[in-house]
Structures are given as structure tokens and as C-alpha cells.
Figure 1 (cartoon, one colour):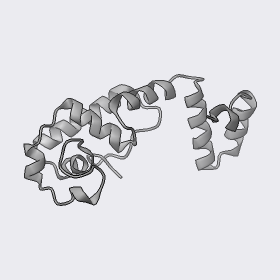
Figure 2 (cartoon, helix red, strand yellow):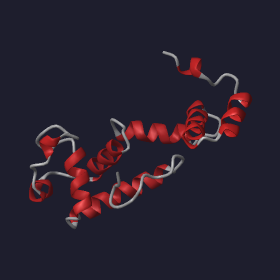
Figure 3 (cartoon, helix red, strand yellow):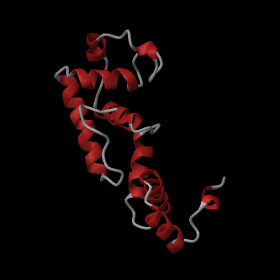
Figure 4 (tube, one colour):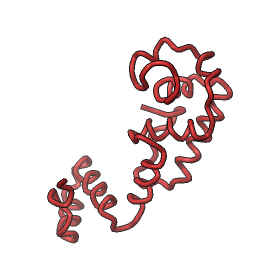
Length: 139
């Protein structure tokens, strides 16, 4: 899925890049951009119907344009688009994943290695970080 025609940001993007996406979404909504309308229709927290369901499909662009939508709303939509419940949860994740050596950073690096089939990187991560493994993330 794309937001405003853009692919998701790289995993270790700075918070400012997410802020930029939120501002772009706000600006695009003001101009009636169709991609912005689709994204807002899907994730806006205060539109009629449940977010991220077909209940929102019947909303018109004029209904979306008449709804209150500010930078906080744009941030919420961006966070939701990335799978987070809120902007603070997205920014907490960004802070953790961009902190070199954090468990989140190590875990996400391992996930990337698994997804891309990079066995050497995965083995190096596990060898150099013996405390990182399935038991690290048990509840």
C-alpha cells in the first residue's frame, strides 16, 4: 500500500520523515488529492463508520473535506497506515529502532535478514548478541 503515492519509508527513517509525510497528507487533503482522500477515508479516527473497514467506502470526498482534519489527525492517519495505534507509539518505535544496539534495532535487523534470506547477517547478529533470541521477547 502507498501513502500519497509513496512507498513506506525505510525501516530506520528519522522521525522528521514521518512528520513530513503527515504534513504532505495534510496539504494533499486540502487540495482534494484522491490518494490522500483514500488514506484519510480508511484511517481517520472521527469519520462515520469503523476505521479500516468497508463501512467507510460510502463516504464521499466532500464528507471527508468537511470533517475536522489537522496536523494531529494527519499524524494519526500516518501512524495507523504504518500499523501503529497512535502517533506516540510510532515515534517511540522510531526512537528505538534508530538507536544503534537497542533490542528493537537488533530484532528488526534480524527480521530483515530473515525476510531477505541473509543467513550470514542473521548468524552474525545472533553470534554477536547472545541475549537476543526468542526468549528475549517472551512475555
